[in-house]
Length: 221
Image (cartoon, rainbow, N blue to C red; front, side, top):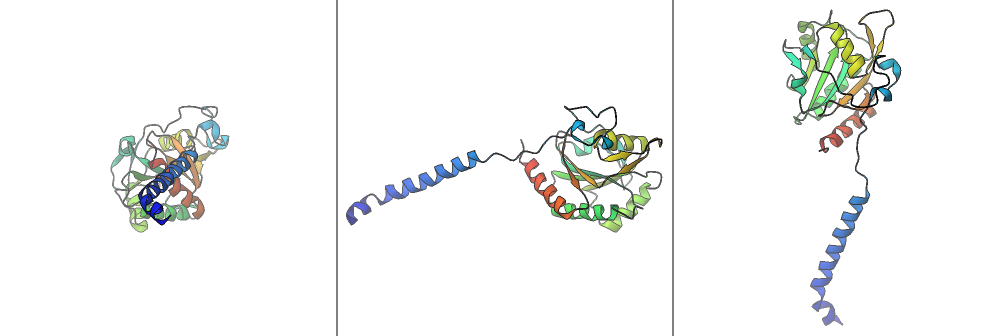
């Protein structure tokens, strides 16, 4: 009997390994691949969407833009071409949710400092206050990495339209033209300029989810 087992030991080991590989492959095939939702204006609360887009259900992407960053450089959609990025809206003199949001952006920057496929983009909602020197001062105070994260200012109407018509991340103020109330939302944008997630920028757990979802996006073809 022992002689029999010795004789076929190699084949037994081979079939054991082969069986394990087959089981592993079947297991992986059966587990559905994690895919993030592509958000459309119709998926979002109407208070965050411009009235002209509230019923749009397909093909929504972030519009082209031209703004100025903390270094006085013009930043456009081309600076984010083929990149995954996280966008938000803030202002430097905010004393409520903005400091928390900025701290969480700093944490995201830290976690992704060596990942050149992901960038950050923060838009001021008070461009009349947040000039280039003001943004630079704020960037230095917060430890912003210029190669990773742009704080941008510019034309107020353009910023308003981006918030309401592209990122779907701000509430309108009735009867106040080109004015808005920004939300705590961080918006995850994919390489095709599509919205793939909204996250509470004041919630540490939401930031963990955001970082996970970035990993999921990076695996997309």
